[in-house]
Length: 99
Image (cartoon, rainbow, N blue to C red; front, side, top):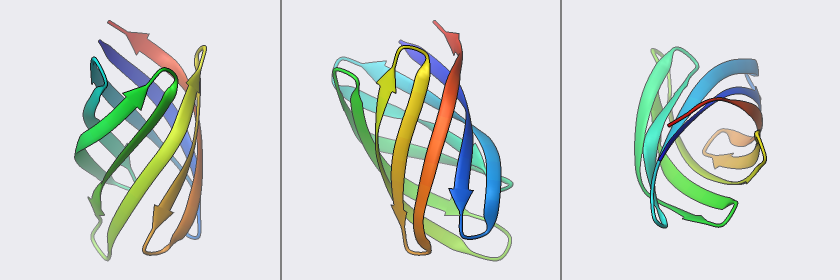
């Protein structure tokens, strides 16, 4: 199953808009995080019911951000907390596509 969410990230660098694509295969979660002018693939994620977690790295022109995201999918909404080497980001989003 593929789910795509438009997201808003509240970061130390200001509010950033982006998109996240989840590729769900049983309890396995992979996908792509788009934001801050960059695309970042993530692997080795997990999903259990509505709860998910994954990690990765975003490379921008000026910085590299390592992250670990943990959150919940509830109906068409996404909420998450993302721990990074540049602080904690809060993320909210809404489902725009499901296949």
